[in-house]
Image (cartoon, rainbow, N blue to C red; front, side, top):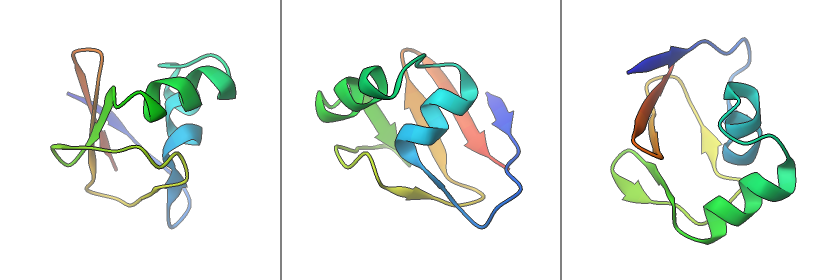
Length: 68
């Protein structure tokens, strides 16, 4: 599990994927999210503006990330 520290109250899912390097472009992040390839707290998430808070877990391409 990769722990990712944020310095704000929340981060949007598409921004999180770019921030971690899991996606290089916003359009790439949007594609993965709309395709159902990303899970938030175990559930598929298709809203790219989904707000992630500390403690949330994101699963993508076999990797698990935790917002810290």
